[in-house]
Amino acid sequence: MRKAMKGELPLIQAVQALQGELLTMMPTLPEEEPALLEEEANLIDNAKKIFLMSAGLAVEKYQMELEKQQEILRDIADIAIEIYAMESARLRAKKALDKEGEEKARLKADLTRAHVYEAFPRVEQRARHILSAMEEGDVLRTQLSVLKKLTRYTPINEAALKRSIAKQVLEAEGYVV
View: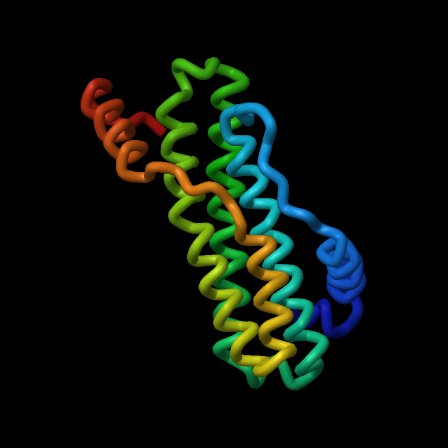
């Protein structure tokens, strides 16, 4: 955040580009079944946009006083951590899928899917905290409507997915990293 404030990171420019994109963004549902982990990649991309929006709005509002807004900084950091964990898991699973094939890498892909679908609502919750700590009234409602566009997704049956993961781990008599 300090580097963004000093102009060493193009955060404000990225936020401005994102704002233009968000104004024209229309949520769409895929016409065909997405490839394994493609849906999760889209959620991670949206989490990155949520991070940019939240952090950028905080920098715009507080500028050099942002360091005094510890709760906002905590939530921004938590979003970054969630994104890092989701992206790392997805990249590892994708690498395994490419190397081993879908059948052998199914457990890694399923674990990644479960993690992404658990983490994404936490990203949304942290962003809501950030936005509501900064604004109120019509401005807040407008920001929340943008956030809603970014958090629209089709949920999965997490219970069935976790049962499948447990079954795979039991059948393999463990999980190898």
